[in-house]
Amino acid sequence: MVSLPLGEEKIDFNGYDLIGFGYPIHAFNPPSNVLRFAKSIKKCQEKKRAFIFKTSGEPVRMSDVSSLKLIRLLKKRNIRVFNEYQYVMPYNIIFRHTDEMAYRMWNTAQQVIPIDCKEILSGTPRKAKKMFLGGFLAWVLRIEHWGGRLIGRHYRVTDACIECRKCEKNCPTQNIRISDSGKFKFGKECLICMRCSFFCPTNAIQISLLEKWKVNGTYSFAPPSADASPVKDRHANYCAKAYKRYFAAAEQKIRDHNNSV
Image (cartoon, rainbow, N blue to C red; front, side, top):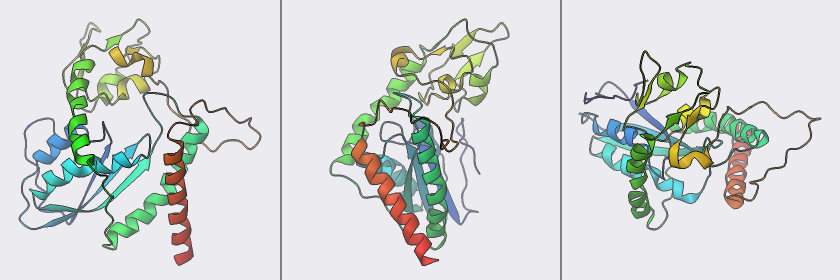
């Protein structure tokens, strides 16, 4: 596994036979640090095979175009993407999924991912279908990368902070600095990934303009108890058709695989 570089060093993939790129979808694009990483790759001497896996809070068709920019960057470096996969994971911003839905997402991914891995290793290609004008829309929405850097500079920490420094340690771009005196500084490399505010044990981080969308606290991915009362999902109608389509396709893939072994 290669960590994303924070500097300008070039990454050499000539010694690899198969390369995988994974990211959470941000504004129907890869996060900006993933695109910077792709630009830092040295052009391979021979053509390399690659696959992409991505996660999102909703399985809408627009998410299929999120890899277009990355695929173009990789192609220039003699890396060809033959397989793309998307897995739905619960939101860490906008609203909180129920634990029942979070478990369903996690359980589905656990069953589907081994099947997809076999497909990759067998050399069977699988590319996502791209919607009409999707590439243009993804290009427009990349403005959110810039907006994230601006919004992130205005994050604040309340008196509830216990100085565990979890946010500083977990920031993927090292955008959070805490001085010896306990003063926080949020830089201009924020991805608005919400890792800091979501995992804060005391909910002490205020996320500026996005505060009303903040989700704090980890999900329980344990299977729901048989005797537990069902929890009303206030967002059950949100992208309902897309979730139904996603889970139906996943269940069909699992059945087809089980019938073939």
